[in-house]
Every structure is written in structure tokens, then in C-alpha cells.
Image (cartoon, helix red, strand yellow):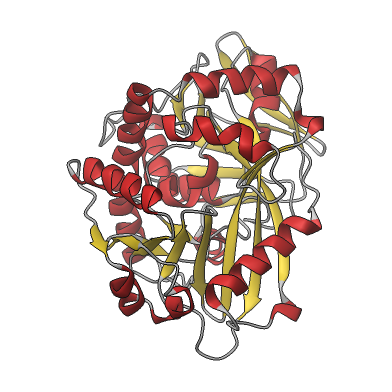
Length: 411
């Protein structure tokens, strides 16, 4: 078959890989000059298979109002985002904040995450791509006892379904990662997830794209619309040409809904802006483990000679402008936690739009159109869930049974 994928981020490129492995010809349309230049460019680096708790949960409800009025909170809501679309999405988000819904969504995400870990392991073995991969686990540290207790409860629940964890004392956290020694007086403990990993999504996606031999990339090409014919998509119209195919895959992240809406498809995806900084490592003070600060909701990963921090959930529509104070806050947090760990004068900032659904789960697979498939809506977990999602969508296109249940992961 001839298959056209919209988007050359990690999800689109991994989907192309599995389709090409099965003998299909693939075309990828991408508006950037190369692969992985938007959401897949500078994320937090974590392959956090054990981080399945969605943003929408009962614990977040009392924090939302406080966060909205706090200068450097994990969640930011700008005035320009208060549109009917955002408000409708927000109501659906609030509807997912019950204990029952949070439990259901956690299990759906975790099921996909554990499968994705398996597929990612197979993919690493099949390709020679270097991406600063570290299979060292992820340590979540805490400076508040109530947050630690909540995390232990969540980890114990997930462990019943195949996600192991270890509870660490403050001293054990420092023994596990000596770079946390500066927080010794503040730490109350941590939760370590030994099967989690980290790596550079940009290097991986670019490297994998370069391995594809039967895929044609149309870079610097803007999707204009999808041309339909009854229950089928006939072609994609771009600013340069018209591309026909037997099957189509939507992997345009936060821009997916723009092209799905004219087709009568509601994906419930809304853009959530995230920020990151990349700091050249100075000496040996940067950690070797990937770290999550649950209090500030900032994640840290060592990516070769770069120390990366990422965080913030800012709702500002499709505005990708970098707000300097967000970057400065991230720098100050990195200094607070790790001290003199890098050359902050050479730090670079980045902002991207994460395609967020109210439930936190992505949207995969079939649509009302016989030959249009979705691989989008992964929010902050595109890197974590990407390999499994790509394999699932490739299997569905071929009419194969998927390896896991897709309950809660489809339209």
C-alpha cells in the first residue's frame, strides 16, 4: 500500500518505520525543513513508562485555582486562552478529575506505556541510532511528606499492573543520585522506578528518519486540507501539490484538530505549551539519573553533554512564543536543586505545544473514514508512548489484531 503520514515528529517517523518494515511505501508531509523540529525537538528526555497518572485527577482540583494566580506555577492559564474552545475542553478535563476516571485513565495509559517499553526495546535492537540513551531508571524526589505519600499510593496501585518501584529515604535518594546532596535538609524521600529510561527524542527521530529507505519526505510542505470522497480520504492538499494514497495517518500533534474538524471529527485535543532549557554540563555535578521534582513538576535528564530541564503546562492557544520568565524560573530551579551543574550563560530555551486530551490518553486508530487513522493527542507522553502507539497504528492499518486492548485509547 501507499501510505501518507501527516507530520514528521517522533510519532509520524516511528509509524513510518513499522509500515516500511512491512513492505509499504510511505510519504511523510512536514512543514519544517527536517524531522523532529517541533514537539519532538527538546522535550524532557524521559521515557517515563511508570508515570501513568494523568493531569486530570482529584488531587489537582484544589490546586488549580492557586496555580492560576501564582507567578511560576506548574499550570498557567493566560487570558488569551479563555476561548469557547478552551472552556469546553476545560469542562471535559474537570469531568475526568474523579477518582474513578483517574483510575481508569491511569490503567489505559499504563497499559500502553508498558507495551511501548517493550516495543522501544525491540526498536533499539533493530536500529543503530544513537540518542544518548540511559536505562538507569527515574527518581522522583519529594520535599513535602503529603506529596510523597500520594506518590507511594499511586506507585503501589500501578505496581499491581506491572510497574515496579522502590520507596527511598532522603539519604537513599542521595546515595542513588549524589547530585541531590544539596537538598539533603529538604528531602523527605523519593520513589524510584527502575524500568524507566531517558534519551534524546530529537536525535532518535532524526536518526530513525535517516534509516528509512522506502519513505519519501516532503519537507517545507504545509498541509492545507484533506480531500474526502464519501467515507474515504482521497488526497492531502498541500501548499505545493496534491498527494494521493491508500491510507492516511494524522500525526500533527496540537494541529491535528484543525484538519479533523472539517471532516466532522472531534478529537478533544487542545494545545498545552511546555518549556525546556538545555544547559551545557560543567564538570561532574549534573546527575546521571533522570530526575523528577514532583513539587515543581519539572523533569531533568542528562543527554550526553547537555543537561535538560522541562516543565510547565501553559494554556495560551497555539501561541508558541517563549515567555522569558518561564525560562528564568526553570534556570533558578535547576540551580536550586543541582547547584553549579552547568554553564547557565550558554543555556538555550525552547517552547512547544503538547497535544493534550482531557483524559491524558492519546487518540489512536480508526476514524469514521475507512482509510484515515489517528496517532496523536499524547500530551506530555509522546516520547514515552510513541513506539507502542506507532506499532499499534501500523498493525491496525494492516488489519492485524493489536497486541493490547485499545479501551480508552480511541475516538
